[in-house]
Length: 174
Image 1 (cartoon, rainbow, N blue to C red):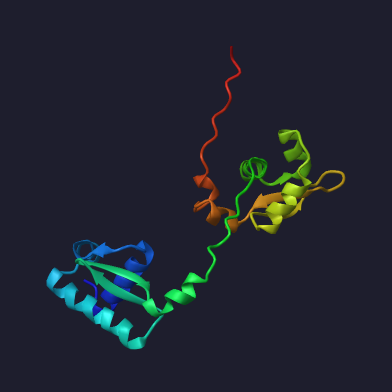
Image 2 (image 1 turned 120 degrees about the vertical axis):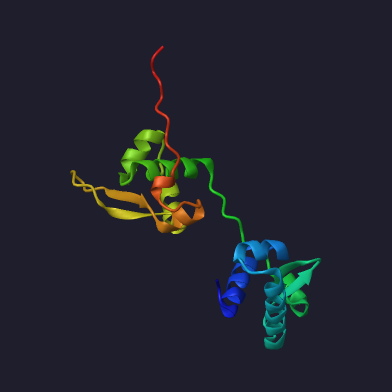
C-alpha cells in the first residue's frame, strides 16, 4: 500500500498525464486506496497547491479531479500561440520510411528506391533531427550513411525500431 505522500504524488502524475477530469472512483481503483482515505488526501493536495500559489491547481468538479492552470493566468496564456505543426510531405515521409526500414542507408540507395533526387529532403530531415549521419559506407567515394534518431521514435510514438509495422512482401506471382 502506498504511503500518504506517495498517494499524493501518484495522484498528481495521473491528473497531469490524463489532462482531463478523473473521477474519484477511478483514482480509488488506480491507486488502490480506500474512498474514505483518498478523499481527504485529495483535499490536502488541493490545499497544498492553493497555499503555494503555483501556476497550476487541482480542482474538484462533480466528484472528479482536474489539474489545470490558475484563472489569474488566463490573460497571459491567451497570448500564447499554439505550437506550429511541422507536417512532413509525402515525399519526406516516404524517404523517412526508407531510412527507417533500410538503415543505415546512403543517399544514392534511397534515390535508387524513390527514383528522384532527395537532397532537400535529407537536409530537412537532418534539421528536424529525425535522421542523423551513421558513418560512411566502405565503398569507393565513402558515401554518408543515414539512420533514424531517438527523436524519430518520439515523434512517431515508437519505443524502438522493432515497433515499426512489418512490411508485406509484394507477391509477383501471376
